Image (cartoon, rainbow, N blue to C red; front, top):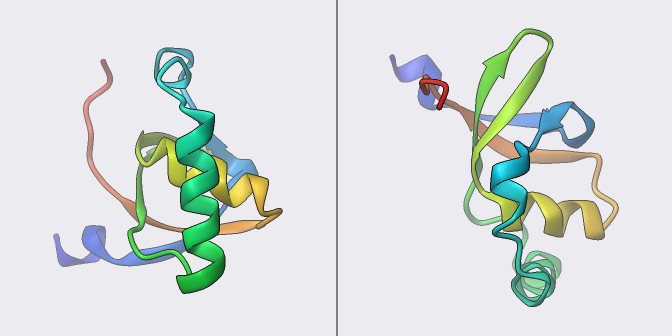
Length: 85
């Protein structure tokens, strides 16, 4: 179980964001998080679940989008066991 909670570097390109989750995106919040990441780095990892060769975002949409805006190829994430909705 401890292995599941380990922070890993994940390829941003391999993270799928479900359409339902994308509707909650706030561009202003993305900008604020991107500025914070530039100043302090990523403080909180995102959460993803495995789905074959890719990952599905569970938590951290704004952090993921901020990384994309900054041109980052990798993001800190935690692999979790989450049921499909």
